[in-house]
Length: 498
Image (cartoon, rainbow, N blue to C red):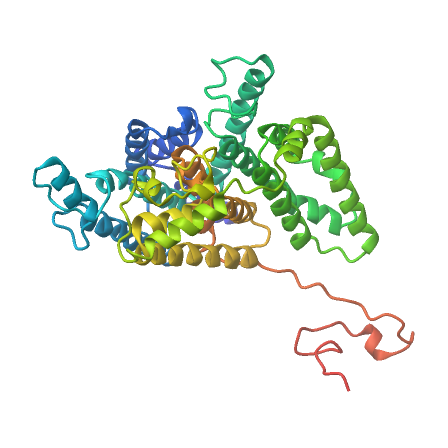
């Protein structure tokens, strides 16, 4: 009788666990659309064409509408509410720049009307309809970020997304390498100074894309590696035992992409990946023995020296030829900020940089530098949309950054939050003097990784194990030597020094 009485008591708990793992068909379809978008977004030349922005907006809309919101926390809901504020700010600026007459009409419209002898309605933007068409980009970004924040707390799905991103980077990197070696135009849609460009049209975007894959792999392996180091186990123990097969595949994928990275000839992409990766290792490294720290440092030095020797020849030649020349970007930033000083509230029109900037370009830039894009996403945003819109966007980005840092501190062993933090820092710094986040194919991947990390940052904090230290050099018969440390409120460590 006792055995039969115990079974019904255990069954409800097991049933509840199984029900939590069952996902509805719409929820699974929504996740498949999200996963397909993340994998395929880089393929059509970085998805810069308006057609592909519309396609991925459709995919993201299906994902947002079908995925389950059952486990969304209150903090995540507030974060999504802030995202609606950012999207509304974009819509307001686009509307003000599109109505006629606008609140701050540009003189070019009346001047053009006088020259043509016709009446032209004055607008507050440089290109008619451009601001409204530009709204597709922030809408796509908001949808991707929303889906990622909702999906993030699901550890299984977050792992699938990150593995898909790394796997796609390996595949696209391999195709780009074959085209790089064979000089095949069909595999290299755009030959940029002999650089490996994967499916992106720009070597710098290709570099930060491959670098993001390297940082994801580092984030997935680093917690286990540091745990093994703290237990005085060799790093080779990571590739034995439970989960070793997955770690071996991840390490091999990371090394492969890392070898390809110098072939992009991107200075910023390579340097940022190395610096952010080293920063992550140093900040996470809590070994007490200096000898161990130097061993790790020496191993990292040997690894990068090997990669640099294998694939860094072309990269070195480019650095010798160009040096640290900014290619006129600092001068261009000054021209943009100087021009927007005349229109600080509304800018010159969202999506109209290529048409608006030539008016303010001086001879200091020369004729070789191409500025159809601002080469700085923050500065271009100020130029096109004005300071108020930029302030709203920057405030939201800072809030997201604070949440990622907070999440990394509360959940130090969560590899998904670490991946989002590393990729977020690398992409944000790189886009401050280039334009990878203006390329939808990379923006989708970037927001997917960062968004999942944001969603996980609201999970409960990890339980931290209290390490009880033993007092050294105590008298053998002393009472304090045998008394255990009860907690932070008692014992020798809790009392102030006298």
